[in-house]
Length: 465
Figure 1 (cartoon, rainbow, N blue to C red):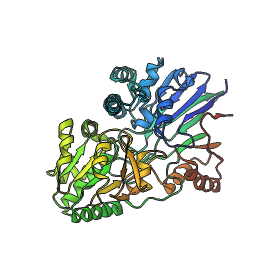
Figure 2 (cartoon, rainbow, N blue to C red; figure 1 turned 90 degrees about the vertical axis):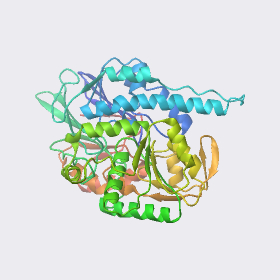
Figure 3 (cartoon, rainbow, N blue to C red; figure 1 turned 180 degrees about the vertical axis):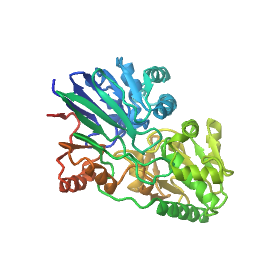
Figure 4 (cartoon, rainbow, N blue to C red; figure 1 turned 135 degrees about the vertical axis):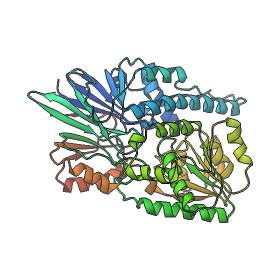
C-alpha cells in the first residue's frame, strides 16, 4: 500500500499532537497528546480518541510534554496493544507525568464536584483515566538512545535525534522502504532553540524527503535569552518594590527547570533580592530529579555552571513544595515571593489556586513565560481580560501581566526557516503544531526557499507519492 500520513491532532492548532503513518508494514502513531482548549471540547476529544489511533501497531513519542504524551493511557485503555518508543529521558519523565496527569484529573474532578454538590443540574465530572491506566501505558514503553536506529515495525527503521526542546526531546527520522530505495520522513517534534539553557542545540537535518515541522512561533522572532534574564530581573525587582508576589505558570517539565536555572544565575549575580522562591508542584520535584539523573543531556555552559556554583536546581532561597498542606500555606504569605507552579497553560493543577488567590491584587505580577493555546485560561490572562473564570468563579484581573515569550523552548521563525532550509531536497513540507495566523508568514518564507508547503487540518490525509 502507498505510504500516507493522517493528521489526527495538532494540525492548524498547537496541542493534541497525534499523527498516523500508514505503510505496508503497518500503522505507526507519532505522539499521542492531550488536546488543551475549551473545557467541553477538550474533555470530548481527550476522552474518545480516533479509532485509527487506537488501531496503530506502535507509537513513537517525540517528547514527554502532556500535549504530546498525555493521551497514551487513554490509548492503552481504549485497546491499543503495541509498544511505545521514546528516549530513556522521555520514558523517565513520563513515568512521573502520566501518573501525575491521572492524579490531577481525579483531584480536579473531586474539587469541582464538591463545589457543585448542591447544583441539581451539575453533571458529575469523571477522570478520563486513572493511575492504573498510566502504569499500564508505561509497561509498553521502550527507551531508545539518541542516534540508535531501531525497528518500530518490521521493515521500518527509525532514529531519534536531538530536538533541543526539553530533556529527552527528539526528532523522529523514519526510513520507509520504497522499492530499491527508502523515503525519509522527518517529524521535527517540538524544536528548541540554539543556546537554550541546560540543553544541547537541535541537530540539523541531513536528509528529508518529507518534513513534518512544528510552527508554533512561525510568525515571530524571540528576544535573546540574555535579554530575557534582564527582563526577569526587572519584573521581580519591580514587583518586590510594590510588595507583591510574582506568580509564574510553568510546565513542570522544561520551563520550570529553565526558570529555576535563570533565577539561580540572577541570585548568584546578586541581581535579585534574597526573597523566598517556591516551586509548588509535586511533579516538578520528581521531574527535577530526572533532570539531575540525565546530565548527559546538558550543554557545555550548564556543565560549567555546575562546576563553578554547584547543582543547578538547588540554592538557599529555593524551596520545592510537594505536600498539599504546604501548598495551601503559601496563601498565608504576605511578603514578596516568587511562586512557580503548573500547569503551564493554567488549565489544571495548583497554579489555579495561586491565581485564584492572587490575580485580583494589583501589587502582584502574573509572569507568562511560554505559549498559551487558544481558549485556555492562560490565553485569557495574556489577553488581559478584565475578568477571568478560575475554578468556576469569575475574578477581576487586577494583577500586572507580563509576557516573556523569549523563554520559550520552541524555535522562532528564524530557527524554523534555518531548520527547514537544510531539507531543500524535500518533496513537501507539512506544517503542524501551529495556528493558521502563525503558519501564514512561515509558509511564505519557506516558499521563498523553494519548498512546497502545506498546513493540513485535523482529519486530512497526505499520500506520499
